[in-house]
Each structure stands twice: as C-alpha cells, then as structure tokens.
Image (cartoon, rainbow, N blue to C red; front, side, top):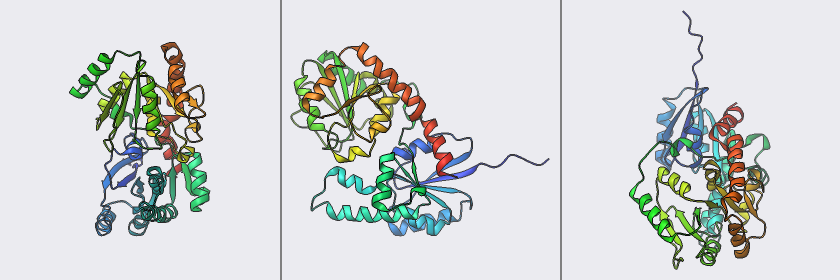
Length: 354
C-alpha cells in the first residue's frame, strides 16, 4: 500500500548559544504539525564554525530550512555558501543595537563598527530576515538597505512551556516570600532586566525611595551588575530559573518595563513586556513606538513624559486591585490574541518559511 502521508519538512536552528535563548526558544519550543524542528549548536570561532557547517552539510536534506538564531548573525553568509539550503536569519534586532544600548564611546566604537559590518553582510546574505517590530523593519530597510520583500516582522514572544509544570518553591523563593512579607507593604513591584540607562534603573530606584512606605520593589537581573545604596524596600534577585521567575511574577502586583527616554525604545519591544502579558500583570512603561505596537493605554499604563514624578504617580494610581484588574484583563486578552507562542509560530511558518 502506498504511503500518502507527506514527510514533514525539517527546520534546523543554528546558534552559538543554548536552545533556550530568547527568540530561538519561542520558535523551537513550539510543536509544529507541519515541520520537524531540531537544534544544532555551532562554534563562534571561524575555523570551527566552518567545520560544524561542513559536518552538517553531509547530514541534512536538500529541502531542509536553516534558521540562524540571534545573536549568531555572522554565521549567515557561511551557512548560505556551505550548506546551499534556504537560510533564514532570526535576527530580531541588529547586533549594533546592543552596543548602542550599553552606550557609544571611544572604547566601544571599534565593536560598534564591527557589529555594523556583520549586520550589513548577514542581513543581505539571508533569504529571509526576521525582526522584532514594524519600527525595526523600517529602520533595517532604510539604514542597512535591505529589500522590504526580505524583511518579516516576527515578535520575540516567549517559550510558554518553560514556565509551566508544578514544582515546589525553591529556597530562594521561600526566602523572598519571607522578606516581602516582613516589609508588609501594600504593593509588590517587579522590575526585570538589565541595570542600564535604557531600562531607567536610576529612575526606578529614586521612585522606590519615595515609595518606601508604599511598595516593595523586586529587582530581578541576570547578575551582570549590582545596585549600590538601594533603599530598604528594594530586594535584589539574580540568576533565577524559569520556574522561580514564574513565582516571582505571581508574587508581584505590578511590572515595570523600560522607563527612560532612550532612542532604542522607539523600535524595540523588551522581553518583559511579553512576560507581563503572559502572566496577566499590570504593566507600566514609557510610551514609545516599539511597545506601542503591541499595547495601548487600555492594556498598559503608558507614561508620556518619563520622570520620577510621573512614575510615582503611575504606581500610586494602581494602588487598588480594582484599578489593576482592568489592565490585567486587557493585557491577558492581547497576549492570547496576538502575542502567544501559537500565533507567533503560525506567523513564522506562513511568512518566513514559504
């Protein structure tokens, strides 16, 4: 009897970093009915990268689609040359954006110029280029001269499975609950992200001082920096697991996004915006073109003129749970309709892989 079932096409994700990193985990972690997905780690060092690609060439089918994950942009050109397969670059954003975020100066300028070159070459080498927002798509088209037909907007999202499952609270979470309980303040506010100018961390610390009798602030970072002279109502946590992060979100009443006037906010959408929506949490953010693509004033608290006074006022306006409930319901609805892993993957398969 003839087997009429078509064998699903293969998608191979290549990256320097782990499979659970950022955008790659959103796409790789979703079970597709149409494609078989796999992950291959490759070396960032040129000679070993070429070796890895040559080994892979002998194993993959000709119709397999190769997706280069961020931040492995520089692999794109060599993957096109060595593999001869369709290559999609899931960049999200230019590598040069990372240097801009940390601040341009004489010391970082060489790295910035190198990143610009990698961005330009990789963007043009890819058959399809995925970016995080419509504003980023316009910017990449204008600045890097990438044809519009190659650029696809694919939201970053998150891998929902990473936050699911029943687990016992860790010692870190139990200790955190005790500390929050001992402060016994009406609100618990979470900031998750890098401690830099773009995030507005200094503004958040000033607000925490002014709200010392009104709110506990949880500062969750990746451990890349440390806060000094933080107020007594500020608890710093770093290097947590996804399950621990889930519990920290559950403890929190409000999530603070990026609260600065940094120009990068005009075209980027931070990971915590998706997390806040997934966990149905009230989200405070600077009003910007980037986050404005997914939220409006009904689903998030948008601060138009970001300063200490406006941030404190926004937090105080959410003191009562009945006020927060409106935003929690609306942001949850936005997530299920536009931002969930299913929607992002459907968009990826219909636009990037055809």
